[in-house]
Length: 239
Image (cartoon, rainbow, N blue to C red):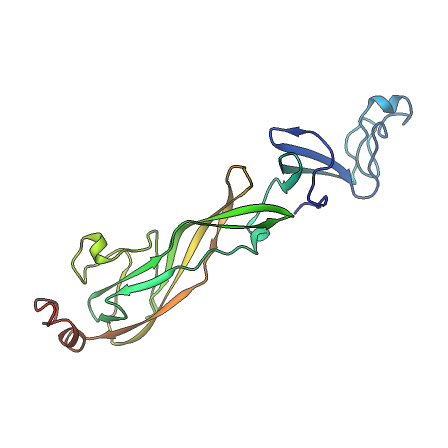
């Protein structure tokens, strides 16, 4: 976290898009204040910052040295932004669907899809307008039967994958018993940010979306398929 200077860089020089600001906690050492005599000699030396600037012009023990990234030479962001700094930003939750739609057959794969994509949210950080970009990197599944898994893909429909119904996929799950199951997915997103006109900067770690849950009704092949699917697909499982 950086002491805000009203969101602006008020001193120092701008080199390669970065300004170096020097100040102190109480009384800043003026130019020459760190000279040996603080008089004529001081005019030739840079003053040390802090209450006890050193004679050689270096920072005293009370000094602060902060690196700030500045936009157009005025608006400034800390050189290091962390996930905690972006607590007010949150990735959008995915849309969770399954096939068959809302029901499944015990002993056969049910296919689940967490529909999400890279997205950008605008906002303000330290009084600077920024954009935060979220990119999904992993999907954490709780199947409702006591088992969990993690995938790096969101899932796709059987048709999109070119597979027949009830085929196993990277995001399918098989239930052994009949009942109603609460299936939950949470998506972990990589996070980047940028100020207006600047390049994207990656932040260490990930942020998770809000969890999304749907109910899945599991029945046996005779109960589910014969009643619902055999007229449409006489050669389907259980027919």
